[in-house]
Length: 170
Image 1 (cartoon, rainbow, N blue to C red):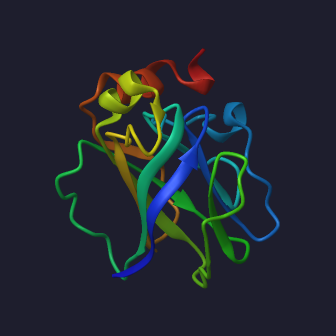
Image 2: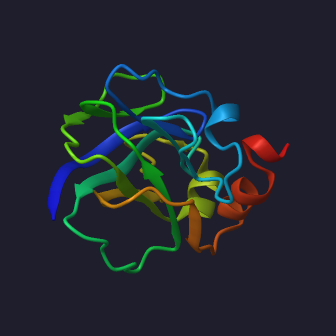
């Protein structure tokens, strides 16, 4: 496992993105079409649209690259999707410059968006130095053939909202 980024990322509207190559960040309504999970939109080729509990502010995020599928660990929310990259990857908060860029040389990857504290993050709404975000996230990537998205663990009301009522379900 290689940690590509481990720090704070600014989110607004509870959104983050990963794009590859020259792909633009996806619009929310298009990112989740036909998916069962509402936290990691992967229907736009070469991009991911990621949901957080905190509406606005700095949240802790780790981005890691694995050789094989990692264990599920202690995360409260776990969803998976697939990504077919089209060049260098850029992970960014909402409408912001990327916090990290990295190569994804394989033809396709499985991605896992893990979360904890989404309900607390949503309840607090804003995070800053005096009020740190109570939620945290990890985006894990590993080489794997393309396959359908999945919800592997679902515990928070905020996650359930996005799975059941999110962008493509309104």
